[in-house]
Image 1 (cartoon, rainbow, N blue to C red):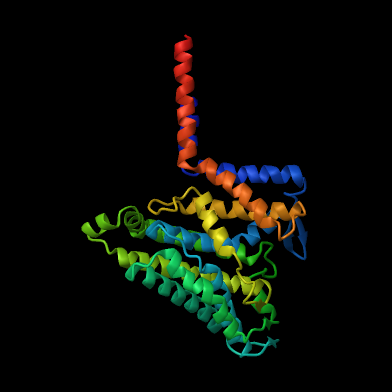
Image 2: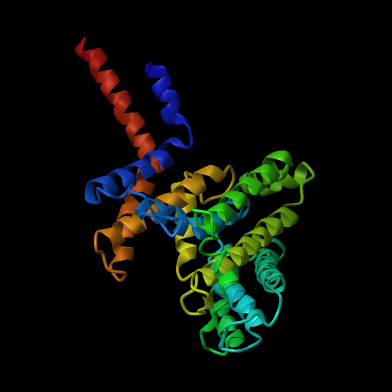
Length: 349
């Protein structure tokens, strides 16, 4: 029995799952109706539904961030700005340059493709700087982190562009007759497709190999430049998709606030998922769990009447505690403590 417990505790998803459970337990204590679900106009409502729904964009970005971190040992801090830029381009295409419109000036599929292509181009730009030019990921992605929202402002002429068409709201809200919000299905699809690609091809193994030892990867015939480029391009593509969802939620393009600070939550989701920010072996499912943990924490704090200004402080404290509990140094201290107790018991006998 003890051996089974030790095996369970040693699995890579144990601590991420425990972290999520702890946050949910706090929710139950502070908000007894947290798991209550109601149906209004054929759509599920409730705190837990809000967590699952609002975490969708974060889950999508965490998937891309996981591959970036694993392949390069760095992060992409531009994904929030890329979300804003992609959403702005899509809304510009649909509005025909108008501030507000009640009809599409271009087909929806064209706007959707535009957002995805913009995200892919931004990710490819980051990938070129990191993989080919060997610029540190933080510095390389800082360019779009700084300029991305400015470019979005240029696209929208510094104004919020509104798309007041019901079909535009479906991606970020819900479809009539389906009780769960649409973003939930999009996030699930992204996770499943990415998992299949990584498992059915050698890409996942290649990413881990390059992240663990770049030089060794070259010696076995891999192309680290191409693999890292693909990881960043894919991350940008997912940021474009998340940007469409963000814009659809509020049926507008808000360059200043769309995806604001979501890149930090995406990085935290990867860390909370038990992934090393130094690159190498990764857990896609761990990052997904980390994303839901972050969103559950955010929803919990709002439910406890914590203001938006104070939210980052409380979130930072909890995240530091969780990450510390998952750190190798903390685990080493625990092992040494257990070993010391065993030695003391032997001497007592």
